[in-house]
Length: 412
Ligand code: AMP
Ligand code: GLY
View 1 (cartoon, helix red, strand yellow):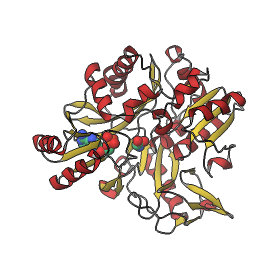
View 2 (cartoon, protein in one colour; view 1 turned 60 degrees about the vertical axis):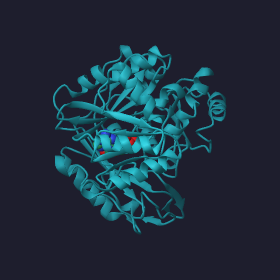
View 3 (cartoon, protein in one colour; view 1 turned 90 degrees about the horizontal axis):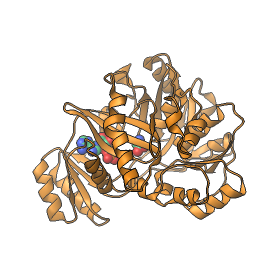
View 4 (tube, protein in one colour; view 1 turned 180 degrees about the horizontal axis):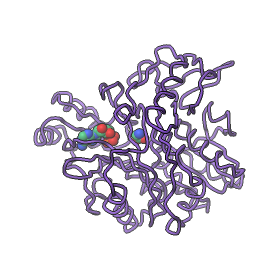
């Protein structure tokens, strides 16, 4: 197959590797890709959010399948442009991508579909926001309605900070005040063709910047898969009570969800609740889920893109476990310092490096963003996988770079 992957992060690097590892002679191209992806596949300098440009490239190059990595092209309607021109695309159109792009839209869909989520109040003024903040009490959960590059959510015991966050994001639109939910978080990815869904293996993401879940929220600092502590029947319950009702509600509203439904879940004492939906693969969860996938990824995504998931068995995963740790630049997430040299990548063993924000520089790379790369290892046990990841991180040097040291510790 000729496959075009849109995006430029570690998630897209992991997707490209999974496609190439099938050994099926796929021709995989990434747009715009990154310096790490360029080591293994051609990259083209396309703006992935420009649907006309992407569609023209796909037609000119006889692309069989476009896989959309990040949310920005989805929310911009790139998948719609491709579908209109008959190009198979894994990624929802703009209307269904609002499940990620607008938290109030997601809440409405969940309410209509009877999907369990926390209580929430939408506020358009600071007076309404303060009233909702006081109604739910501490800890406070305040969210921007629209895409906010991971900065829109604040969970805090500090009422003044909650109000200040609401005040800031009200300049950009509505805010959502939510009831605080407590429990373990699960990221479950479901492939959807608009009617049927197939689950991938669950993973857990570490959202806070520092060990022990301290510090600010980030895009994700590490992950592991599978989750040995999940109750039996968890995945089936999510399919029956969350994923299928959501997909059906969207279909009934003529907003078919074709792509990856990312269910961000929390297992509370009262049952499973949705914290958020995303409309694409998660980062850094993808880096630990795809290396464990045994079933060829291309066939699954093509079937989702072309309406054929219903006839396929569930994807198979290896018994090995995976641990991934993100190396971030000094100052991430607030104000990352970029341009610094990364050394030691040639010394690592038994791990995969998924590049996120790097540029080639002489015989090595420099960091060009906040989350620089993911280091991923497979192992027979979490302890074994952790040992490999942290040994590799010990070889890599990036001035001021930081990573969490407790990823998957609790399952080791
Ligand atoms: P989101 O971007 O909505 O996934 O939120 C980012 C993170 O904030 C989540 O992964 C949770 O750790 C936390 N969070 C979001 N909503 C809630 C909530 N209602 N209760 C507790 N924690 C939350
Ligand atoms: N890992 C969180 C996300 O991809 O949104």
